[in-house]
Length: 614
Ligand code: M6R
Image (cartoon, rainbow, N blue to C red; front, side):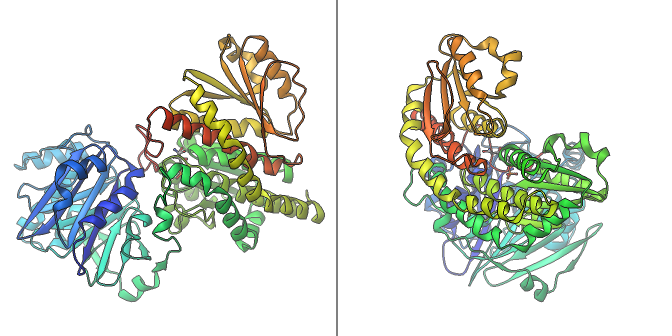
């Protein structure tokens, strides 16, 4: 994980821009932070364990000025989050400073080798070894780029690197292998970073760096090269670089809090627009129809993703079955190896990932593509690894999501996947034209249902979040409701730090009900495919459970017991609308519970938004 950034500019001090970029990258990790600046013949390094705001307050970094600066925000892998392990890391001479995202797998042997040759390695990190390897090339008389390429040829694993050298104060070197990296090309200023929002203060012209590429930027120039093996490299011609420039639609404001106290609540409120943008973008998209045709011709369909993206994938499996009569197998990305033996050239994979950079999801895609599978990627990030490695990419177009919790991208993924299921139903002949049109009309109402759900449910969610004192809860559902409960419980766990377990309501009798005694909170997430959940609510209430039923207001359930009922916006029994009606309550509950208890909902402990390690 970790976020890296480097900015070099002829227009003045870039330190504030690097710090702002680091704030936008904090979703990638936030246990340590640091910067390195070149100038005056040497390097200045400031770094510390802890959050960026404390770092800015206490380190004196805000008083520094430089035209070239690199920065890092860390999610610890090698070594605990201490001042010494914070990036940037330097070589023995202190002339080379490196920031890194990724994991160097041959760390132990490289370290032993370097120490054997007399290098003094002061941190526990794999990153520091890169600085020492470059140092060896430089002291052997190589130019910087040669020394970098030689160093890269020794690394196994993944890296996105930004590097400065005291002798070239106007340059930032960079390299990428299996960790995301983009270049931002501005006017008299260039940047390199892990992600697009971090460079939006400099430019919206972006080039996605590919695996095996390296290069350098100065305020006026950007040069890209490709590794050829054994320390060799060749230049990528400028025309080819220019052809890869993308003008990103995201604005700097989209990546700011815009007056909201946290990104998470801003992104919850952005959901109606995000869902509308996804729907409008996808409904005319030929690739959605192409994807449906590819799916229709598959002999096996695997749906893979992690966390919230996996939960959106579950919703796809539900509607593929219900609307298209098509069987799909949902797979948690980190467990993908179990299923590799069944993958062949007649397999189609729907890979869902907001970032398009989740390690496990990419590993599954790579492994299965090697066996001949066709990959349909569903992502928010144009140019991400998933985008580049998919045969067909479907973009959700939610705009940047900075809060660690996936909120707007979940509902965007759902509307896109529901649309895909409708198209699949048409191709399979399971849906007639009029039924398909009716479903599209329903989907077009999803943004409005989402808006109403946020408005109606926020006061309830806020009051409930303040009233609850923690402990443990079940969130039960049947059918679609169970898949939505999985996402609801993930939000409660990761943001409010409360134990919430999603369970199929019918299955709860086979063990979990043993925990239910007086006052035990049981949410019932009721969807219109499963009125039987009323029976489960009754069973839980009979054992003293504190039962709260969340349902669309027009879904009537015969409860007949003491249970609190929270009415979400009506859906007319239209299942495709029910995620939009029911999910906002749980997002808002988690958010307000976190804020009320003094937790940071944007940066929950131990988490990073994009998990780029195994
Ligand atoms: O970028 P991705 O969608 O691949 O990320 C997958 C998960 O890491 C992500 O959904 C995670 O579970 C979030 N914390 C959920 O809020």
